[in-house]
Image 1 (spheres, rainbow, N blue to C red):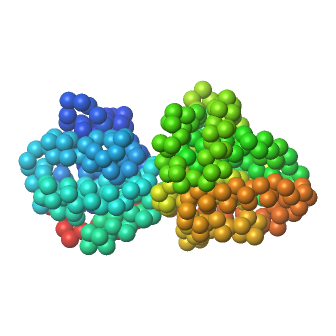
Image 2: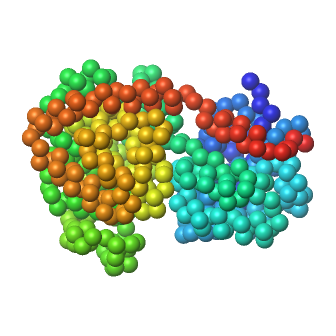
Image 3: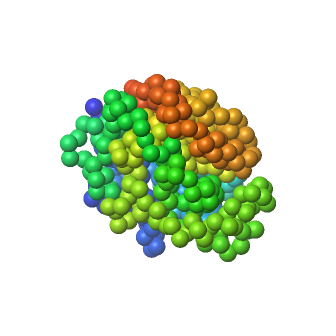
Length: 443
């Protein structure tokens, strides 16, 4: 099926595009290229029209594509990990006719931050307003797609529908599930074939050694470091956990300089001070990654271990967000859904509430999910740690019965994931919405 949508790239041909050389600072001497991410991968695997050398096609709706690595603030040179400086690179790189065409809405720039959410929404609002004013660019020359649900709140601030949300990793996890179960030779980046358990396989393995499984990948974030120190302190034989990368050096340099350190409960401050060395001595602590030489950049949406799942009842999921209360669902929350394990979620305020708004169910009663309504980050984390302690003190037979009692929710969640998020054209729907909100982009 053809498309009246056309996506513009600055590189010269498809081979350069597939090699990651496109848009952003492509025209500058620095040769910095914006990353290939979710949207480009989607466009290349579907039937959209693509043009090169900044060509604006006639009789089509044209979009210039930019994808961020850490947040939408990358565009504006804000933050420590700027992918490129929009103001210096884009405005300084393109011809006057290109900018005039943008101002005259001959095309629109689509900006996305999918792999990481934009946390500081208020800062983004302020910086964008300054940018639009400085370069005399109407806000509706742009559309922004982000994996933080709160991004849509900015539509009211700008008086225009230019911000769009996608729970990208929920869709991606559902598609990974189908890729694995429908393939006979599919291997992940860790060089093994993921095994998806059936309901009957799970129920045959009711006697398990561990109460909890916790897989921790990139561990420089505060909540993961506190959790890792907690694991080393309690030395529980009820928790099976991994921790792959060393925490940030700033944890050891000066604790008082850590984000929000003064707000940490004293017991959490002491926990990290006393056990950060013990944690570091264990790293890398591996479970499902022993066949991989690279523990920093492997794809994580398709790493499922039958052995680990059938030897533990529940999961402790450490999601990406924690401090800034953004609502961002990564592949981490999809793992226990696919492997049909109840989970407790270490993440932002109201994450479970928003998860249920996507149609999923959670496990209140098994866990005390009052933690989700605790706005203070570190009180919420302490509540979770206390609940983990409570579960670990239960007799084995009681834990086994709890697992069986809540297994119907696990069945429901996996079926809901596959039915409502696999093989869904989420980006096509977003592009359709963007198109509806454009007065005219056909030239």
